[in-house]
Image 1: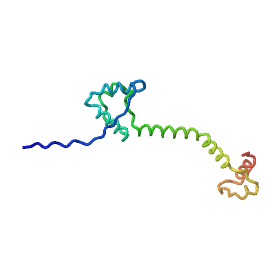
Image 2: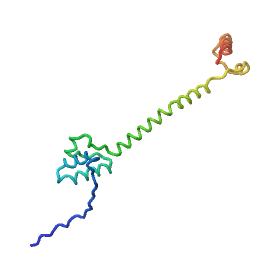
Image 3: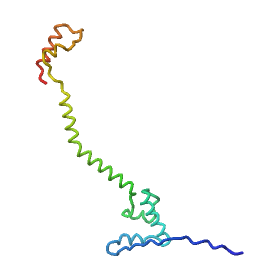
Image 4: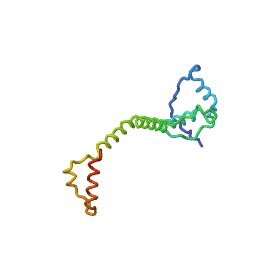
Length: 142
């Protein structure tokens, strides 16, 4: 009875250099991970970054808040929201100016006596009320 050997998984080695003078925080973090967990931790961090989701935290990452990673999608959303707010704040003066200009354009125009006479008046008004209103409209400065 011979045991079949399980075929070995194919892999590629991914490596990078961490310099002691500029990357000491990364080296300290790396040394703090148990040797059997290092590859899993790196895979998890890369997948979180690629998918933009926040997975479960590695127990060693909880101890150092500098090592918590904010997903890329959240950073992009914050950037987009900040850009929108900045543009909206920059547009407010022009928007208010347009509103004021529209208000000026929409103001009623003073009518000539001939135009005022051609306007139909509510028949419920007496002749005296009609004359008083027309006189008030003529005196009004728009």
